[in-house]
Length: 347
Image (cartoon, rainbow, N blue to C red; front, top):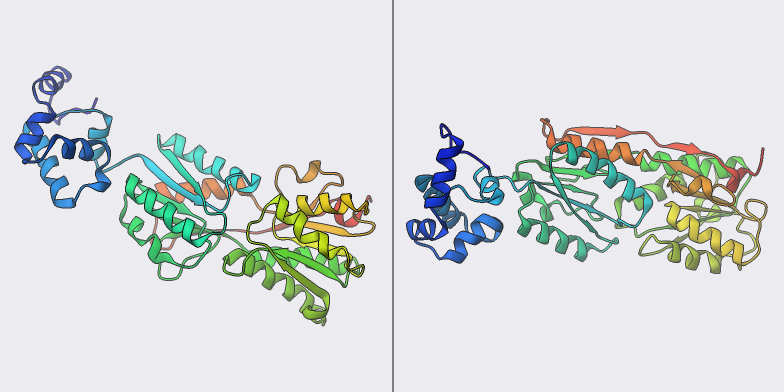
């Protein structure tokens, strides 16, 4: 139980028994419901009313539940986390990293998935604002920092994943998506592939656009024309089902000899579609993913993919959020290509 400064536990217990919610409501000139909202859901109470209720609590020596103690310190102990898809093993690992740090600080996560939908992202942010979270970690799918600018005034502020947001002073954690995709496509080109399909997400999603840029850079570095080498298929949600659906029509084009997917969920779907057609991987079609999800080495054949240190990215983001930091603080990770049998075959 929170204690008043200079009071003994016995004093606090006695005062909490003699001063109740009705006393606070009467002193502040508000309803019982308003006091309840200030204690349990302060984000929905106007600032002036909230301050009046808090002043009445202090004047009366009211000591309530844990929620009241959090209110007086202006902390909800909630952290909002918004990612593309909590069902994706990559993002699940990022969340585990965030959770590890949050647990150390006795903070609770409130998590939501955008599924690459800008309207859903906006709705999630509004919901987190209503819940009064103390800070926000977000992997934004569109560059619209005005949607989360209000969180920058919260006790922990904002940390963005993937890239710094224009006009935002928040911290950010990134991995070079351009370089990661360049490594993946360079690997396929070095193996002799000249007809490569790229299964990508919407261009409005920053990391999808950056991975496309990296793929095209790899092709241009070799003096080749991206329009002749690369066929891009865009899907809305980066799932296993969409990976399969995207690859099936490509298999009618017998020139396609390699597929590069912008995440491992899409690559898993692509692998299933290739197996449905009884095509050998990598003998008939080479396959490369992105993320190095936990399941990647367990596939048959094991998946060549771009490694992202997902757990470390999560812990870095959470440490930036809860620690002292300069405006615009940044932690950067480097991608690494992990070559397995889906592209190169058995050594």
